[in-house]
Length: 543
Image (cartoon, rainbow, N blue to C red; front, side, top):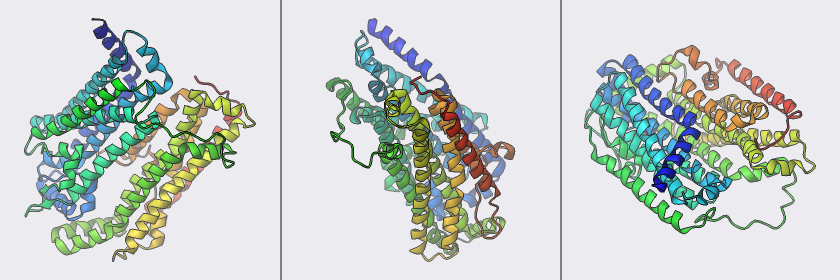
């Protein structure tokens, strides 16, 4: 009875702590399902238009990598093709962050050791986290089901789609708890877990892109790579067409194996220890660590490398579209007609359009990379290490500007590598519809919006430190939903204009409108300057 009471108390504590974050995740995923299904019905109401889009997607592998597995032109199957991979990606991210927050992060803060000294012990908190994560994914499944059903889709297919989303989330809940046992820091556990979620998305994309289409060009059988991805397993349910339940056994089995391994490791290791411990550091710091910027770079090197590799991969993928589009032009006349219509309406080559779309995703990576520099400021302050640093001959302004300079440099680096990857891919292909200068223009166009997500959170950090992490990620998530997915879910243009990503220029020659970029750059510089000035008057602390 004592263990049951402790479990109930710890679960209640997790619910109270995560009430706002969990509400945002669940309602956001459900709203994305609802708005996407509604917008798709309004935009692609005819079977013929959906069939044309599917033919273009199947003929262009890069589109399949970003969307999903085509399983027919019915409205339910088309909606599942368009949005499921994004829903599963969000469920996976939510689950890994939740798992690490209530395991490795609590060990870092010391609260896990305090709880372990009570009758709850070390295993009951882990059981509470498992219960909490399972309940969160059940809510996500119900939210997706409710969103699709409210949009008028078949309830049976909506139930399968919701269950698939929740099952993928459960799989990554187990992965997150396992990585919390393996990694020595919450930052490392979060980074490795998120990387595995992204890897699952990429493997699913590779499998979809390398699959086998049917004769009609609207149904694709996934390639082998999809079977190594929990998101790919979710797609194999064929919601709204086959409504298969057995593929959900695969993510549930992964969850069970990961949880079992995490449980065994938790029982055998010491509190605060990890399977992969940190290497011993130097007795004395290197001469290069003689400034706040250098220290920030040392602390952020791992995450900057990760985001930069993501930018390079995005650039390589974007540049490789040239040869794929050329293949479409030769292979499918109906797809060619659709592609030509897109080119005429946009006033740019299809290669330019596709690279702009993919670079908008890379721009989000750059924004996240810059945002993490500010979040690191808050983490250092909350842990008390900032006060130790500021006790040396280092001013608060110098400390802040060091991180702002690093954030700016990292944003530029991510987009530079994206441009380099796209240029290298185009140079190795036969596509000549986009010159080198236009590639670099497209990469540079993403910088102002990304810098907004460095400057605004920096001001939040100065004025309202406790809200820095939550509000920083919330602002970025809102910007992505409104600016990048807003059109897909049918949001009003006035609402979409609230996102900086909506004002990113799309270079198409001499007619490119750069006014939005200049305004955003001015806002970012002014906001950063205000944060630096106000920081002079602000006290530091752990609150």
